[in-house]
Image (cartoon, rainbow, N blue to C red; front, side, top):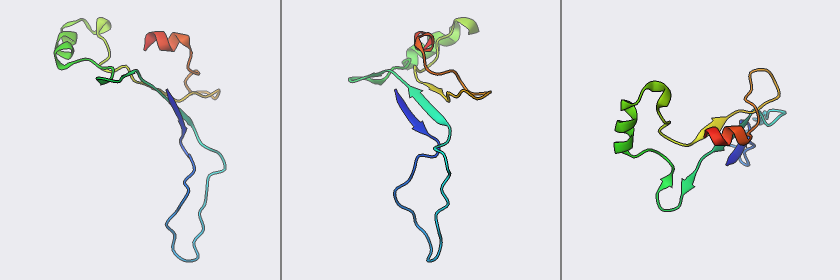
Length: 91
């Protein structure tokens, strides 16, 4: 699991003489990425053969091709809920 902000700050900038960096006042929207990664095989995802078998299933029964989930949690309207156990089980 990893979290980043949309406006994470940069350490250096390329500027012309006399220019000034205009930074945002806040860090921006929070982005959370959750994935299952296996050391020998990498990210948890369906193999090519499993993808073909998956396509034969009815739409509601199909598995996602990859375990990665990206959410943008916020208490503001339109934001995703914060990461919780229910979301992890669904993942």
